[in-house]
Length: 397
Image (cartoon, rainbow, N blue to C red):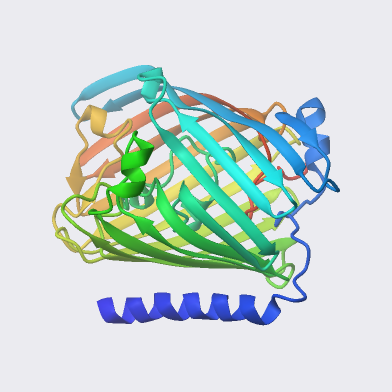
């Protein structure tokens, strides 16, 4: 099985790189892969270019300069088998800049605070430099994000929920030094790279202490348009192979992982369906399905749901979410089920929004109820990704 997955990853990487090489001369201009392009100005209003300090796309020097940042504040109340717990948490606080120069060079730096701003400076989430040879071939070096699974690929700025899926979080995906290639060719987007399995608050150590092993990720997204009978649709495939050592702190749970996601958007309705498998490791294999339906009642109000089902071939092969669930005694087991229902209010699109909902989860004979609400704001450029990135959908009313 391990050799087969390695071959799948290698084949996906070879296909994407070969396509990039073949299409390098006539690649199309990149467009946001969203079901409703051009609506950001309508939804974001006066905050459309929040953080943009300079823009001159024809300049031979500095083309764009952005002040970056995001703040995510969450309050939760959780009741479970072992009691209840509640608190307010500064979940994410990040500040940085991004400069685009010479029409091809991008410099990106973004520091991160610890939970509840303790400490205020806790290293960098992202610290990278990228050179765009053209739309089909971008080379990036530095501390950057692991983009395995659609659930992980979507930035926290666009998530419809406070936390990503349980099985995705078990992969210990974060930000580490890496070398990646990415690009867009027509309706196809690819991403592939080599990553360190460890990082540090000390960026010098992060880039020089390379004794934690390495991981390889490959992913491809196909824009299917109306082929599935909806206004917009996408197919995303991704895989990861990890050669972690005992010094690894990230991507050290599974030796291999694969995922497949279908994303649909039709009028005010959306559905994300993703299947993920983690294979190998000391605690065996794990498999899961993540379903995310949504309905924009109005342009600003969205009803969202999520159902998670995950299983493992080992009695304690699954671990509950560190936030909320573990605080009330839910720990490990081999069958995880969780259902979430919530409302999101978009003040200025994704740039400023409020999330609120309730989730029920069971694992290992224990259960938990979590009521949560959060405020999220960000400034800086949008990223390109399938729905729900960038633009909310037009509402029914």
